[in-house]
Structure formats: C-alpha cells, structure tokens
Length: 241
Image 1 (tube, rainbow, N blue to C red):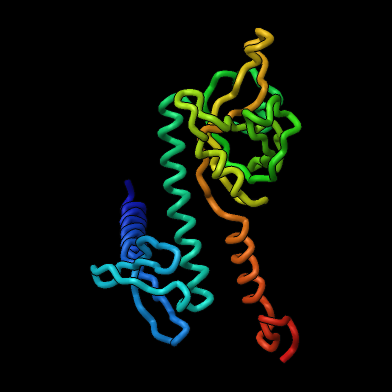
Image 2 (cartoon, helix red, strand yellow):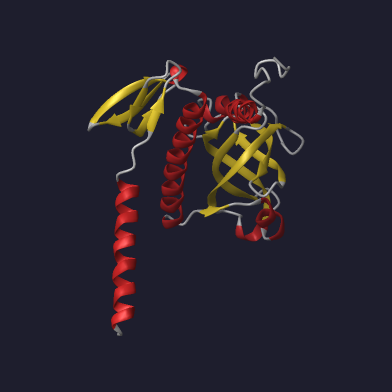
C-alpha cells in the first residue's frame, strides 16, 4: 500500500469514527410553546406525555405543550419506534414459518396461501359481508394492501369454536375506521366443504394490531400543511392576516 493511499485510508477511518460518534452523541433539543428548550432523546410516549432521557434521567413532557415542529418530531419518533417493533415481530413470524400476504400473491398464487398463517399490513376499508357465508357466524370486511390493491375476502369468526365465547377480534374490527393502518394476522382458509383443499375461500383474521389510525395520519398531514403556509396566513382560517 502506498503512503498516499495509507494517508487517505487513515483520514477516512477518522472521518467515519467522528461521524459515528456524532450520531451516537446526538441529543434533540425539544422546544416548548413557552419558548423553553430541553435537551433529551426520545424514549417512549403515551396519550398525553412523552418520555425523554435528559442528562441520564427520564423526564416527562406534555405533548400538548410541544411546539409544532417538535410535535411532528415526537410523532415521527413514535412511529419509527413502532415500525422497529413491527419489523422485529415480522422477523419472528418469518422464523416461525409464517409469511407476509399481499393481494397480488393471494390472487395469482392462492395455492401458496391456503393453510398458511401470515400477516398483512394494510388499510381498513370498511365492513363488507358480500362474501360471508353466514352473517351470524362471520364478519367480513375489505382492506387495501401496501401496494394499493383491494381485497374483499377478509373474514373473522364471531364465536370462538373452542369455548363458545365472542371472539374479541370482532369488537376490535368493528371499531376500526376507514383508512386505519393495521397489521392483520390470520390464515388462508381452504374450501373444505367442497373438498377443494387447494382453493382459497378467504383470509380468516385471528388478531389485529393498530399501526396508525386514519385520524392521526390526517392530523399529521394538516399540521404539515399549516407549517408550509406563508407566515402572513392565519393557519387556523387560511386567510390573510
């Protein structure tokens, strides 16, 4: 290795070390509506408070007191943390033999879905019983997957066949709003009545996990739009001041 190349390599390693160090030591400055600034890293949050680690100690900040920019920072931090949890869960499911469903896969390769457990991160589109065989026993609904494709053969069993009690997933589904982003976990069901085990009759959902509500997504979009408006425009009315 030539001296010149060694020098360049050494400089590169120093730069890389400094970059990693800067990223590791980065601390966000939270600005409140009062003008106060508090340094700390995002830890977690609830419905009213956000937890940050400031100087090695956890500290609570009221979400309602955050400046607009820092409210957006809090929300993105929360969603990033949520996505990390979802990614870890997906990795565990894959390791257990489960698969990620997409509408394209369901429609073009249904034989790969029949009898397999899996999940789909999708947007709830509304209740729909058009493909439900018995409204007393099943609840049907439509979803739109991450690729924008709609699927209308999602169902959930109303009564748990093992103990005869109402399945809690029914309550959770009926409380969803159009546009809610949800992780649906279930199994591809074969047509057992007609002895066509390779035919997919639908995806039966056993569990759901909220990723982001439509209301939260709309609020974020509105806040961003208000920030982009000219400063001489009232963000509440959209009119010139």
